[in-house]
Image 1 (cartoon, rainbow, N blue to C red):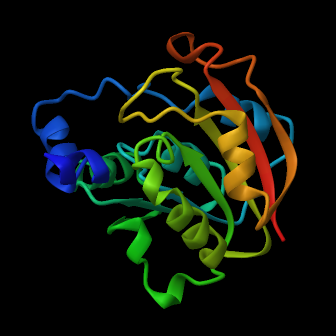
Image 2: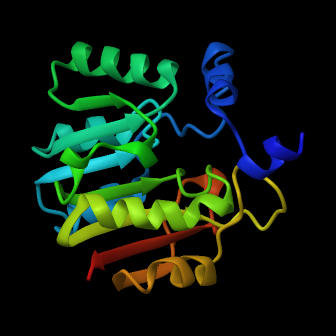
Length: 202
């Protein structure tokens, strides 16, 4: 039990959610703050990676808009659902069944941007330094991280609480902040709980 608490969810735990169709975190569509960033011309098509992509609403949305998107998830159920959706929509995007922290060297400095959506809060806080290290490794110099960080205000997880201070403390050394603000146009179930961040790799 101690190991489970320390490590958070394991692969089998996430897969169980897909087996039981228990996807309470899934909005059923792309998160509207990302739509707003796109509509405000703050994002330009290029190579984009989405860690912990789940069913891949963001993968689909940005693939439809000319991005070269790579979705990463270590749950077979998530990968299968996203592959089926891409095939049905006749979209090209790469879907990797991988542990994000173990991406091969060919991914180093390979991406113009990374989209963070409910992955940072899903991993145990002990893994957050490794998250920043991996993101820094795979983004190009000057690469963009745009994300929604979930402040639950509750103990335990997942999702694990993420405050403004948590974001700044973990990312400030490797990234410059273009924006970090409480999101005012989140979905209803996440209203007043999301920090919208736009950062650039130093």
